[in-house]
Length: 601
Image (cartoon, helix red, strand yellow):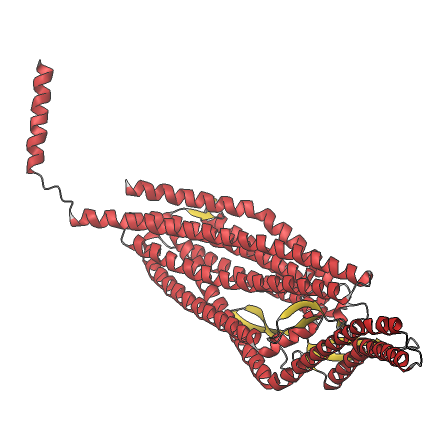
């Protein structure tokens, strides 16, 4: 009974108390709750963006794998067609498939570059949002979550860089295997890779040195805390500078893409592709569309790069040629069109103190796909000769057969004793012979029309040459501008990462806990670790410089095989390191999540 009375009294008290309380939370409580909700939302957005980028990289890798299979299949079909001395249709079809696969590999390379920039811009936006949300938290929360966030951000950046480096190397490997890079470009690519290694390690030396300077200063936590506010503000500004540079690079990349679209939209471009790819193997309709009907008098246009004849004397030219063999077995080779090989131009700039970065941009000669006027005349003359030898001869034979039969009829009708049955029988053959003549005439007309269409193609290319050259120049300028924009990105990124290392070191001093690469160190231990990292970076730089000397003095023979072997080995090493990087990201993210959840309670 006492228990029941006590319960009733308690309930009455609660009810009375509840009736007197304003159920609205205070402004300060609302602000804290909203700040924590903003932190959770921003953190989730960061995690989702990283997952989306990983999926995009995986999709690109799958598409690249399919493009490589398509290229190898088409290449095998083309080589088999050459070995079997198959007709021009089979060779042309395989060549078209090879070109399509090469274009897809190049498209994926461009897409990967653009994707990397877009993702970095998005990540900077999301990081800014999280940092803004964190600033609304109390001092203790900022100190705890700020340090954990910095560790997570560093780990996530390292993982992203490794994933993008693997994707970049796989693209380079695919381009080499698909014959998109010649031996000179391959040598330069290998040298640039070593220069990239040197630049990365020089930057790491600068970052570890900055960390050592903070630890050696032995500042008290309160003094470090005051400095941390200033250095974080500087870091925030550098993040904005980095975003501006990335946005400018993204814009420059889009403009370069648009300039390349302008090149591809040129009538000259499509006609040049008809010359070297479709190669006039098929008849076209009035609108220039492929009818799928084979043009029998077509003479195969070969590429020096695609045959065993080797390149012409001038190594920068890929010649499209045809051959004619006379009755004595003498073969004449005549160039119809030259494709001046594009150049990957290397530029080197100092992007941070002691740090040099090397970039390449593509420059096409304005004479890209340049017609050889004498070769065009010879090619047209050769096709006309084929038409005359085939369709012309067929018409001549049909006309002779008809004339001969008409004479037979006339002779029978002139005979003194007319054989009416013989006359009728002879006359009955005339319609069929006339049909043969008509068919042969139609075939000749069709072949002559195709010759005229081919002549028109070359004439149109000649007329469009000036527009083509201007468009190529515009693309080259856009390509170089994009290269320069990437240098600006490197400068902003290196400045940001250097400042970030200093902030991380100060944050560690404030927290009283130094975590580096997932391990806890004392100040002396952290300094020793950083010094070992610097020593390791210097050794890597020394080896890279030695590699460059060797590459610069090596001959071009076997350089592509060497590059493929090196890329395959590097990809294997990088992929083996991914699990460790992923674990560090998972651990730092889990620590940040746990702390954030605890703060939200």
